[in-house]
Amino acid sequence: MNTLQSLGGVTANVSNLVLKGHNIRIKPRRMEEEGPRATLKPLVFRVDESTPRVVQSVLLERGWDQFDEQHQDVEDWNLYWRRSSFRMAEHINVKPWQRLNHHPGTITLTRKDCLAKHLAHMRRLYGRSLYEFTPLTFIMPSDYTKFIAEYFKEKQVLGTKPTYWISKPAKLSRGRGIIIFSDIRDLIFNSTYVVQKYICNPLLVGRYKCDLRVYVCVTGFRPLTIYMYREGLVRFATEKFDLRNLEDSYAHLTNSSINKDGASYQKIKEVVGQGCKWTLSRFFSYLRNWDVDDLLLWRKINHMVILTVLAMAPSVPVAYNCFELFGFDILIDDNLKPWLLEVNYSPALSLDCSTDVSVKRSLVHDIIELICLNGLRSEDRKWGRASSGSSRLSFARRQQPELCKSFIQFASRACGNTNPSVRRAVDADPKHTRTSQLREMMNRQHVLLTREATKSKPRLRARHTPRKVLSPKVPLAQSQPHRTKGPVGVLPEAGSTPNDRAGNFVLIFPFNEATFRASRNGLNVKRIIQELQKLMNKRLSSGKN
Image: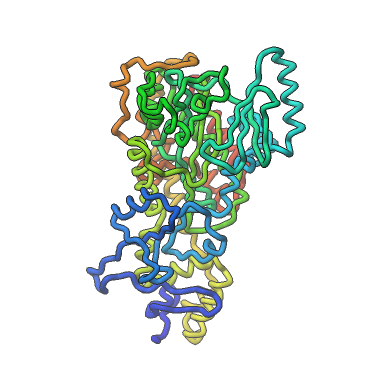
C-alpha cells in the first residue's frame, strides 16, 4: 500500500480501506478509465417489491442501472426507493454517494392521530388563528368525553338542525373504515380513531365534491428545505353531493381507490366528465373562468404546507442524504378556504388513468432532478475519483464524528504524524457547503424581488362571490387539461430561479435569509412563525390594495 497523501486528499492512492469495527469503506473508483476522457458509470438505483413501477420505469428511462445484489458490491448503489421506512441504522450507515427516499420519524406527520396532536400543540403555542386550517378534531378513545360535550353543545345550539361529523381510523388509508354521521349512535370505533367536524360546504364542481392532492418534497431538516410541486391531482366523488344520504361513499369520499369502482366512474358527469380525476392545472384554469384569485388560493396552500411541516420538524431525528415525498390532501370550501384533511406517507404512484400518467411520471422525473440538484451526481463524481478524501471526511464528520475521528487517527498514524495537512485536518471544523449555497440563492432572490417590484404593478382581480356549485363558462370539450406543466397562471413563490427549482418543484422554504438562519442550526420555530406571519400580513395588505 502506498503512503497516504496529505489530508485534503487522504486515501488518494487507496481504493479500498476498511476500519475494523466501524464499517467504514472508502468508495472504489467508479470511472470506466483513467485520464481526461474518463466517463462515469450510470447511476444505480435499488428497489424492493414495494417500489412503484413508475419509479423503476422512469429511472431506467433516464439511463440508470438497477442494482443487482448477486453481482454488485452491497454499497454500489446511489438511490434506494421503497414504500416502507428505513431503520435508523440504515440512515446512520448511508454513504455520501447514496440517497434514501424517507427521512426517519416523518410518519408522525402522516398518522392521523399524530398529526392532530402536532397541530393541536402548535395551536396552543402560536394561536388558533394561525392553525385554523384543520377542522375541530378529537382523538378516540382518549377524547371521547370532550367529544360528547361538544356534540351535545352543538345540538343545543342548532336545535332541530343536524350536525355532521366524520370518523376515520388513525392507521388506515384509501378511505377504509370512514364513517360520516349525524346521530352519535352511529359512531363506532374499536381502535384509535379521529373524529372531526364534517365540512358541509365543499366547493362543488358540477355538483360533485372534490379535493386536491398536492405533492411536497422535503429534502432536509437541517436546514429545513421544502419544495412544493406545481402540478398535482384533483380527485372527484362520482355521485352528486347530498347531505341527506351520508352512507353513500361515492358522494362524500373522493378517494380514487373507492370511486374507480363506482357505477358512475365511466359515465360522462356534469362538468367533471369521465373518470374521477383532473390535473391541478385544469382545476385552476377552471377556477379562473369564475374570476377566482388563484394566486391567493395557491399562497394559502403554500402557508398551510409550511405550518404543517413545522409542526413535526423539531421531532425529526437528524439524518443526511435522504428526502421525503408527501401527499397533502386539501379540500376547498365554497368560501375558497383550504382545509387540510390529511398528509400521506409514500403517496400512491400507481397509474390508473391518463391523468395519473401525465402527472406522476413527470413527478418522478422531477424528483430525480431535485435530488441531483442537491448533489447526488456531484457526490457520485467526487467518490468516483481518488482525490475526494476531504469531501469524504467532511461528510463523515457531520454524520458520525466518532467514526471520523478514528479515521483521521488511522490516517495520521499511517503518515507518521509528520504531515501538517493531516494535523490541520484533525482540528478543522466541517464546512457547510449547503449553507453557502443557500445564502447565495437568497441573495439572488433579493435581487429578483427588487427587479420585479420596479417593473411590474399589481394586477387587479375581480372579487369572487362564493357559490355552492361552479359551472364553467366554456363547454367541457374546451376545458381540457393544459399541456404546460403546473397550474397555468399560478405564479411560483417570489424569488424562484433555476437554482431554487427542479422541473415543477419550487422552493417554498426557506423563503428569506431570516428563515434560513432560523433553521440552519437547530430549528427556531418561534422565529420562523414570526417571519411567516410577516409574509402573510404583507400579502394580505397588498391584496386589499
